[in-house]
Length: 264
Image 1 (tube, helix red, strand yellow):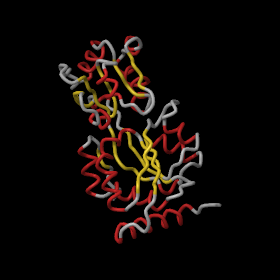
Image 2: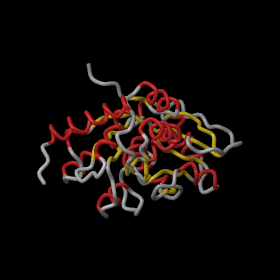
Image 3: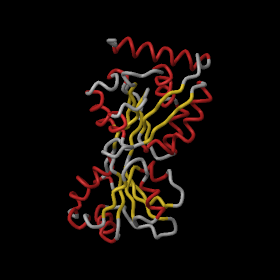
Image 4: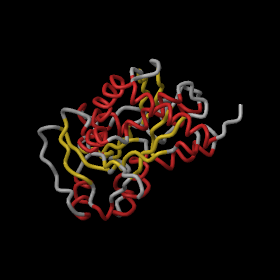
């Protein structure tokens, strides 16, 4: 079946709007693929969405990049059930070009920045400047990062900018799949952890230190889009609409994310 993208978007958004006003038209199992950057926020957002719509979210978490089975591109390629996906925008755009998602349904949700954390009870290092961040990284025996967007930036850009790429090879610990860096940090697999701020804040038992200095910060946009083969497009569209509400924005901001405001 050939989808007229504009009509498709209008139809599902209209259905989502009507559902939000009158209650769920019917209960649906909405399959969601999502970056771990949203995991802390979804502890509150998922129950609120389900209560408002009557739908049930089935969420599979994973990094926006990578080759582990949990990585979102691998889940998509394997044909995992999905109605909507929330991932780093360039990664989502790549999947849109492959025909996996409906282009006109893409919506920017939040901006996500990278931060630093240590185990709970450990002294918090100073990462407030580029020089101090460099010293902190070189002083650590081991530094953990993900295989996702933040990890790619750290290994391919940040270490190079700081002039410490060679020194960091022996002390780098890549965390693969959907496991968060904070979990590995809590377990003692590394002394220092770098990941999206919201992902670090999602883990108890570690101490969030602060963001990377602005001169070497990487801000990523997390976007959402409906799957081209979505079985529950209305429920998926309702989720996207809900994530743009003031109530949802407040939760996203509380967990370390910056909601993207609509263009004026």
